[in-house]
Length: 313
Image (cartoon, rainbow, N blue to C red; front, side, top):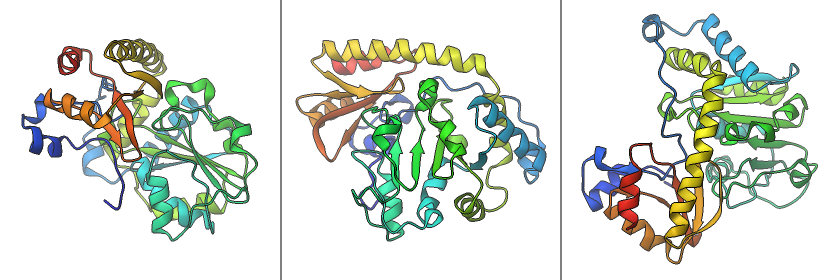
């Protein structure tokens, strides 16, 4: 895995602690546990190459939902990770600033391309907004005046008023969006790059190739991004559930460090011990190689809270 630690991994946890896969409550990711209800998918979405009308429909829905500037274009991809893996060659930068701790795929992607990390203000910067795992929100002032900024808004659909998508009209900014987190459909594999037309956009499009997004993903993404009422209701539920999780964890002695309404970050006395105790109750949590005291939890589905409570008892 070249040092890349991620959430997920229920099968590995089962190998140690046993149980059936359905017995496990996976709170190691920040994926919405109440996914968007799948719309009817036309049969041709499975059997034919995606047509231009379907792709145009998805991009129009994305443009409307995120209020994307007219001067920016939208590029859809089979998951945000597909874009991240192609950013380094598209930028052509000699070095890059990735302030951490943060989502580790950026450092890995640039390392794979032979691009070193730096703190120099003259290098492009990558800013995860809100940050994973601590939920930090990046202001324009904090990001500074770099020659290019990549702003990952994978978790920003919980806080739409804080989005920097308006900056995508500028020639020095790339805004990234993930579909799987907020809509709870990570398996659909859908992500978006939003930026002004130019060499970086062209390089990303060429690297992704034709028919990057599957027909079923086009249908699902279009329906979900067009459903604003679902998004509003979901934000309200996530806020309530995040507050409930904080109260539960604080009652067990944890301290809230940060997070978003899709995941919460806590400081505990011994993160590995907490992780192991939860695993014995078939609850998968997230710990980090750079901190002995940070524990991150996603939100349980509405009918799984009792399992978490029992594992914490």
